[in-house]
Image (cartoon, rainbow, N blue to C red; front, side, top):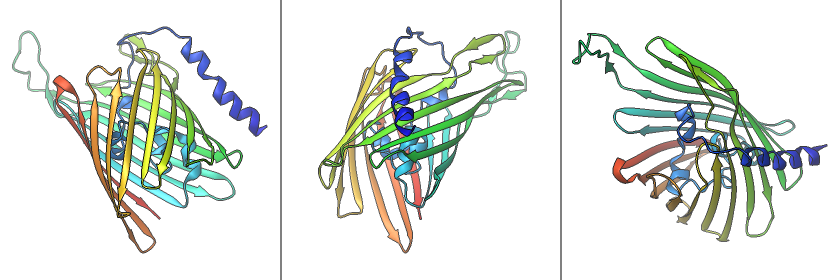
Amino acid sequence: MKRYLFLTALLIPTILLSQYERHGTTLGLSLRIGPHAKACGMGEAYLSIADDASALYYNPAGLSLLEGSDIFATHIPWFIGINYEFVGIAHRFPRWGTIGFSFATLYTEKMKVTTPFHPDGTGEYFYWIDYSLGLSYARALTDKASLGITVKFIRLDCYGYYAQTLCGDIGTLFQTGWMNTRFGMKISNFGLKLKFIDETNPLPTSFAFGVSTQPLEELTIGLVISKPTDLTERGSIGGEYRLLDMFTIRAGYKFGFDEETWSAGVGFEKEMGKIHMKLDYAYSEFGYLGKGERFSLGVAF
């Protein structure tokens, strides 16, 4: 039965790949923003690497590799006064698998309400808030293969109007045992459409395949190829190198994205008794849009 579940998760992507491209027609922008500074420093070539609470976003199957509990939080000062926050927590139960919870939100600063007769503002203000709540479960099916699923509640709020729906992710992970090489696949954000006021749009569903390896104990390299249903194929490659078991330097490059290209980052880890502290920073280049920065704090215990 476990083998059939794993094979089914591998075959489902063929359905997505058969869909046509619908450029600029999806809602749920917060679902597209990678939350982890460590992953973004590697160009988000992270699908088969994630093995802590960041797997709640990048590949829920990676949660099966977690030992104990893990928490991480990210703050991203996005563009033109927009901010993004992500919090994830996961815990492994030896007999039942790993369960995790996540919360992500994309929101604007206070903005004036303007009309043709009041171009400088009516005295009213509004906000745009886009958030999601996720519940994830992962389990090792064999000593090499794992499966993970996430169910998410999505809601958009703006000036008294709102839209909400449910969607899900499903991911797989296979470990070869050779140079810590892993293969992963994930389908993201498949589910019901969002109706905002009078328009109904789908969520940004996508299929992704990733592979990673460690040619050296200190060096990890990853590659991800993805196909969103509303965009053309895209890819990313990146790596990280550990120094003195505490410091990490990272770099990555993205292909097929509109503006985002190269990225770089650094990380610091420290054992404090039974607590493992992690601090990460990433810089991403967005061409005409400028720079993107991410800050993440993680705790494992």
